[in-house]
Length: 443
Image 1: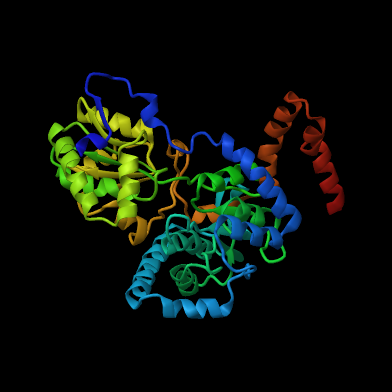
Image 2: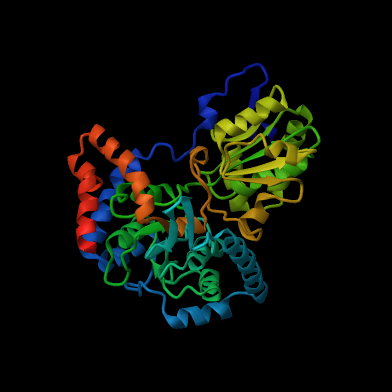
């Protein structure tokens, strides 16, 4: 069975094959063409298109269904969800809220740059943000918490949630429980490209938003790209990906256990164990089939597909330095470090959405209950982008104030630069004319 696990031996090369760095979402050309008619239909028909696409894409059985989750649906959700799940949602929400409250910037900072010259930033929330919660390969109340809690902490006046409906035309019960517990009142049943279009244009039920956040399928990513002139697409978050970085101190079976975490999301995920230890690689290859045998069949099959395909498996490098080089080139969404001294490794990681250190911090902990946001940049965007945070729901407004004495110091250099760049109006506004006009007003 080990032959079904992709094995990449890089011990004899200093080059990282580009194919190992590729993700499934890299080429969106087919999806970009296919989302265009969906977007146009939602723009032109509103709710009618959402209902039609709900029946076609989400297999909703009722002829019609309410686009907005009704109050009685929220109430019924608590009866449908086990108490221990409700308790776990409440516990996770507390940690997530505490983390993002600590992350929130002060409303305004203000500094005297020089005598009489003041400048700073004022932070204000974005007016309306849509939080996208996927459902295609499962139900994800954790994603609702990760996307909506920072919006509430930031003070967004109109935070909403959009999510695909189930066959019964309803929202996943645990997702509604999470929404109610954290204080989200508006949940709408529209996913995929049609959901993105709904918040970009607004429909009879769904309000238009300024920004959308949250992970999604290539359909969602493609729609965000198409509608980026109407809707800020937020942190790029596509199919799940992770790297387990292990040195020779690691237990290979444990590394294999954690390698499965993100690979079970779906066949479009990416997941690698990267190590310079032949022993760890061999133990992991041997352990993976045992782990799969004890899993739910669908999730095991997803993991087998990923770890036996072109976007996953085991990478064996010539030394641990080369393993770290692979990580920084790959720029994973999730990075887990299984090392004798994980803190020493942390300082050498420059590209990753999150870094989880040590044997007791598996990706599962980060995904659900640790507190930092689990909506992370994918497809190598961790080279330039950051995890979703409270900052993504806010904007900075620069503020300046100059006194008369401060103005006297700034006007001359400003006029000189304006004249050099050929802006006569700029220059006149800080010339002696300004002082004469103000002096005349004071008389």
